Image (cartoon, rainbow, N blue to C red; front, side):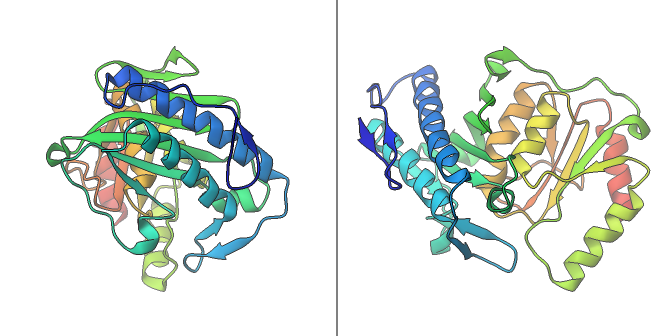
Length: 285
């Protein structure tokens, strides 16, 4: 029995080979995500000590404790791998992507919701290699205590162990659209965001506060369309991107170009409405 940084007992981790199959990597990531979930559950009803990373971007001790726990568990199994986390790597202003096996972690995506007692708390773990080809190999996205999304490249996407697929909606006007305002609040960014939203209001629009959750919504067919400009970094989008593609959906730049994990721009849809969606986004600019 181990203890995390908040004094919560965490059951011992089953040791796996330091190098191994994607199944080994996935099992370790799922284990780490579930243990991080205990920290979130413990902290949800507690008084939260909040810091500001930006004008509207928050961080709590729970974010930091989750990231520390996940990294410690992953490093125990895979000490030669590289690690990128929102609360550590990003705080230092360094996000270096290399060809080395790399884990990307967002310990709590939707911290503002968490601080305000909203239950849409997302945390995810993503494993990459062959980064010269931006190849995401496996992802785990845990949403609250009930939903665990997983994907391994070439093996499909799953919600709580059951296969999921993107929607089959073919008409843009009947599609459910999700977007986020991003983290920047300067006037030009806000004007561009609200103008774009105004031009897309013939569709239903939702904002969940989590890029990862919206991408999982595309993968599971709950959403048909999603875009976001100006999110924090690759930790916001990497895990959800693989889940979408493994579920038969598409991830791309809102301009219609190929998705770039290092750019702070993403769009996703099922295959049937992509072209019409891109055209609508272009018309909204």
